[in-house]
Image (cartoon, rainbow, N blue to C red; front, side, top):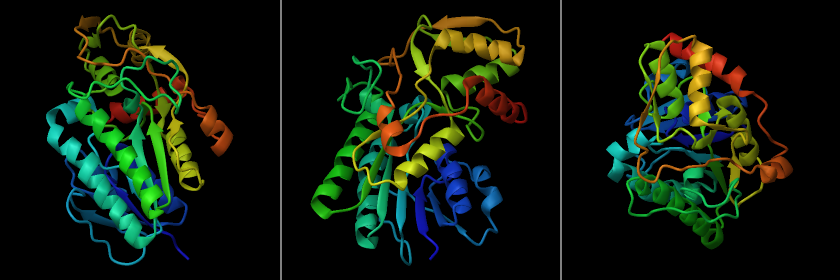
Length: 311
């Protein structure tokens, strides 16, 4: 029997890669997106595929899907600071109302539900690296709180549906991920640096640049998502690359990779911007037999070619 899978936010960066992977695994994929931050170009190659269907819909409203569903993957949400600071109410609604609607559908269809959560649940962490048993350091009334708290609520209601209604649930805490299909105006460090370097503009580093990030190539992340979906683990699992780099070193790496002569300029660090970010992935290694395979240099070369065609 062909598995029928709904992916909310399926026209986004990660959602569209998930669509590709599950179709390759033989699933019939229903992609649902209201295109606030998603892009039809990400899924254009799937139109005409008998195992793909697109529905334009806002998941904060009642969700109707005809027929059976085996899996629901909830990826709908603005996910970069430039988006959720511009769309604060929509971000809170999709994390709360949208997750509630998607879970209700999973309950009705007896489908396995996977929540795309985030490392932002850890906030500006006081523990390093961040493991799943760390509860986080989040400012609920700061500008980033609209995203952080939306995802923390989404995790809480997902667990409530598992415990109270018996819904099969999975929670992926996703750390910084990059690769083809990222938006040029995404606002995060990687697309910003690559676009600035290719345009010979100054690279903007916030703060002193000594804050750290850990970058996971998208194919590695998607493999982790798939393995988690097929597992029976109900509690959150970190998915990301534990290889840590400072933002300043990362900017210099982009300059070297692109051959750009751009200068680096420094600006004030945004409020509540995390100083450190590194996943502790021993749980994923043990339960999913998963860890990233693509090196940063290898992944950046592929990603750079994608950006060169579009800048």
